[in-house]
Image (cartoon, rainbow, N blue to C red; front, side):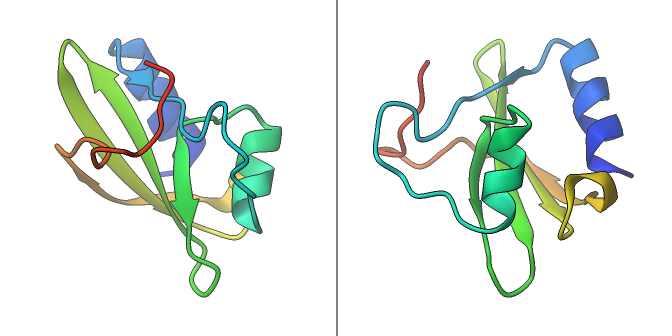
Length: 94
């Protein structure tokens, strides 16, 4: 499933993006820059070698990790999800 469709379904189901790297001098690179430019602040990181990105969402105390892959937002696809929260010490606004 395409990332933008996945994200729309998550938001419709009351999942909230967990803003990552807010208020720090994190240097976005590669695909991360494109995601942040489009206001997908829930991006935690993207690998440079495979364009695989990790994003986090929260709903009623539960967490969801979403892994997507693709070199451009338009072509990104969901490849994995799990009930995982950001690691302790990983910055988030909430």
